[in-house]
Length: 311
Image (cartoon, rainbow, N blue to C red; front, side, top):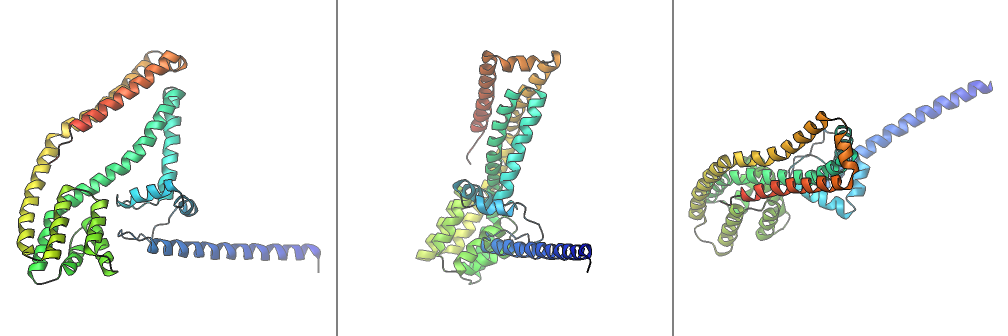
């Protein structure tokens, strides 16, 4: 047999074997990720159809303290994203912000913008958690109504919680589904509801959990307690809605003020090209830039703090 023919045959066989090996490896990795998603199921509907990116990075990141903190924060936001994906997106966003701002203004401004982008990424998770908590609070009147109807029909409290998880919409469906799953595997009612209160802390939920726990311990008129609580939560829901409407203009002002500062920088740079580069090159200019950014951040924080009204 000709040596060239043998070489071609061996090369083709190696290519076919490599393709088959890659296919087997890809299928095995996908099955492993699906198993990990099932084992780490946190009450959110598992999206098996979506390809999870950066799986290896996600596994390595979750072994670190930073990855575990990111994973805990993501778990309470309801977002369909892994810790590895979030980490990569944040790094890409920070680098992109630095490059864009450095091109528009000056490299020193890019460093400040990158630091702000990193802070905003953490603030985004907090905002999503607050948004989910707010949506859950708005569902509490309906939740207490379902629990009251179920207990009035003679069902046990554990059964009523499972029924509420089936009838309500997200996020109450996922959160009480997790509570029902914890009760099914042997957790006490106090532990399961206490874990819920840690994920979505609010005074309304604390009152509901206290009512359920005390009624479960001592018995008594849980139906009438839930009926009264439903009416109270309805009134608080309307009050919170009115307060949110009244404070909408103040919150818009908190966002508009930093945007005005960015507009002034663009105006200065447009009046004389290179003015921001000269400012960032001098030490007094750097001090002025940092001080201005700190004052804008302080103003944003104070407006947010003063506009926060507890109902």
